[in-house]
Structure formats: structure tokens, C-alpha cells
Length: 334
Image (cartoon, rainbow, N blue to C red):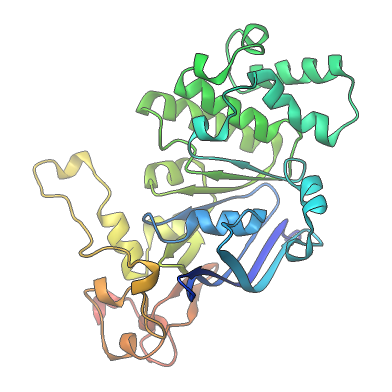
């Protein structure tokens, strides 16, 4: 297997709130390989977006990476200064944000915003930048690209705005694209079009992606491998097939059970009891999912489980699979 394009190892991120430090991400470890799409799935507040912000060096001011390694190829991302980040962002790693209207500058034309990446990272002439910008607008499916080049964001529909945000992310041809819930604010029809565009990017550009979503339908459509996050922990990881067809962690099973299905018409939808704990309410040194888990037992209240390899690339962070608990079997047999 080729070397990973991104490696994150044992990363912890904490927030300082009212003079207290609260851990928001704990022991985050994963890699992204060339031409691979890694999905990160979980409820709101589980740390999906925070993980991407840490990778890109855009954490909120009261957040800090306490420990861990983050490497893009051979570049240590934790060692980068602001001037170094300007060379990396956009050119090597780019971000597609969830809300296009907050990501776009309302006072700057669409064409100028897309071409900014070329202005920063290349020595193209103005004419060449305009030509390449219009070509990129056409590639992401924007109609009348020459006319829209001079338009302002408010003159575009939500779907068109999202295509502009994607064009901004792609214009400098990055190796790694981080897409943070890029279809959440869109209606179903536009969502399908944007997903088709991402699949096209995946196969034509051979870029690697981290695709963040809470929607299993979206994850199923685009991802090769999946990380399931809960309360700042990666609780399960594996190929798309391993996760969807043979989920192991009780949280992953519950998430999949909660997916709406036309075959369940007339049956009350399954919901996971309780909610993701806030930073201040998270318990330390215990299983983060214990309070909501119907398979809780003594070990869950005594220590955080270790991530245990089940088979192949499939692993789960659950006491039902740890050697300490002596329970290497499917929890349905417990």
C-alpha cells in the first residue's frame, strides 16, 4: 500500500472555558491514503468538524491541540507558522464548508473569489486566471459561467453557491479535500446533484477526501472507509462495507438502526435514548457511550476502552471487544 497522504496520531484537543480545560477530542488516530474518501459520521457535537479544524489549523481561539501528531505527507502540520499555512491551505489541503453563504464574501464577485487560489498559489497572468476560473466553474456544473463570473453570491441559488464553494476548493488542485457536511443545507434534488459532482471529482481528479456527515445515505454514496465518532472519540472504523454490513460498536448499530427506511413504514422510528453530553458534562476515565448504551456492564464504568482490531481494517473502541474484559464476541451474545 502507498504511503498515507495524511496521518493523525493520538491527537487530543481541549477547550478552555471559564479557566477550566475540557477535553473535546481524545486520542484521535487515523490516516487518509491517496485517492481515498474517508467518511466521518456521528451526531452533532461528537467532534467531526473540530477534527477537520484541527487538521487545517483553524481551531477557535480557546481551543488547543494538547498532544499528538498531524502530518500531511512529510510536513508536520503542528509545526507550521501562519506564513507556512498560507502555502498549504488551498494548494495542498482545501476545505468545503457546510454553509456557502457564510463561507462566501457577499461583497466580492464569484469569479474573483474562485480565482483567489490561483492568485495566491500560481504565477498565472490575469487572463489565464480568468480562463481557468471559468473552466472550473463549468466543471462543477455552473451554467452561464462567463456571466456568473461577474455575479455576487446573493444572486445565486443555494445549490449554485455550494458549487462556487466547491470550485474555490478545487481551483488550485489540492491533494486533500475536507468536505464538512457540504450537502446538509440543500434540498434533496440539489443534494443528489452535488453528490454526483463529488463522485465525479473522486474518479476524475483522484484527490483524497475527508467527508464529514451525519447522513448515512450520503456516506454510502461517496466513502471508501468510515470513522464513527462519539463524544470526541473514534469508536469504530472500517471499510464502508464492514461498518454498514457488520457494525460492532453499540453506537454504530444504534445509528444504523435509526436510519429511516420505507420498509419500516408504520413502525415507530428507533431513536437513541439521551443525547451527546456537553463538554462540561463528559465523564473522564469511563466509556463515553456508557450512559446511553443498553449493553453497559461493570467495565464500562471503570475505564475508557481501548480500540480493538476485530478483523482486517475493522476496529471498535468497546469493552465488549477488549482483552481486559475477555469478551471478544458480538455483544448480541452478551
